[in-house]
Image (cartoon, rainbow, N blue to C red; front, side, top):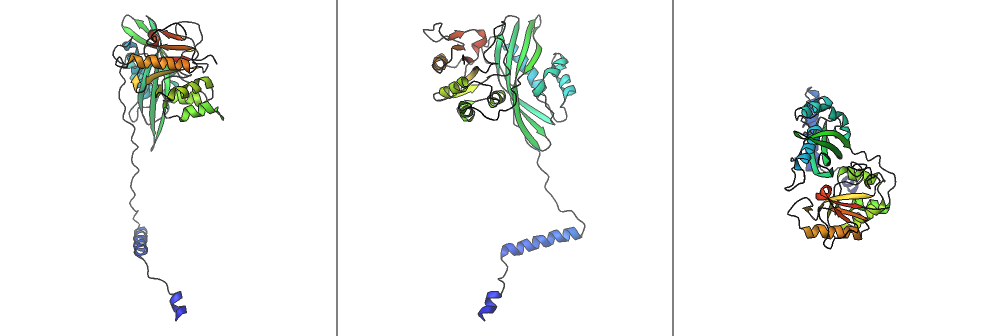
Length: 320
């Protein structure tokens, strides 16, 4: 008797019964020649983006607006309008030379659709009749059923003529391939949530071509500030604009900050005391060359300077 009880199969549970019924239904569908219904994959949703606008009181807002207009025209397109030919049409519609599309580089990758968000447009240099505007952007690409995030920084060169600012050249960032090993200060800066880095700056750090004096200073400043970096190495003019003097940026010995503790440097509502304090903190972190829209009170030569180019950001340069 006990042997019979032990060998008897237990009654099927509710899940087993439902599973069997589902299997039978699928089998019947297969035998009848009907294909089971499948749910189509949803089309991936691209992020919502907004047009970038200059802050009130910019030194040359028209130059920035023109540079951004071109980058947005090349780097964003609706379904079915990718590629160089469509980009040339968008550029010509804005009264700019279609040949500029040939200089777009990473701004025009292959994709079904793209959206672009300009993070910030910063002066790389501003003179009465020529300008460099560094357009820092994020980009999202839809290819098939996937969305790929990316972005770059473009040095847009402009000249002023009788009818206003026009674009003469595009010089996109080329950070180089990622390095296998990175110094500890660089790894720490990349993972610090109080340091916001745009795509080209992230790639600069990952390429291992940024000096540890820079990444160490970022970390020092992030202990007391939330900093949003605009440019580190690539995407910046090789020389200080309008001169033949090499810039510290391409050598990986400088970085620029466009927003401090949530306040944009270019915003006239940003407390000047905050910018002055940050500039002093930058000098304390080891910068020998601190530029911004103001001179710290008691200002001094020392490491500090101010000019029109640095109206919209704080520059921190390092000797090594």
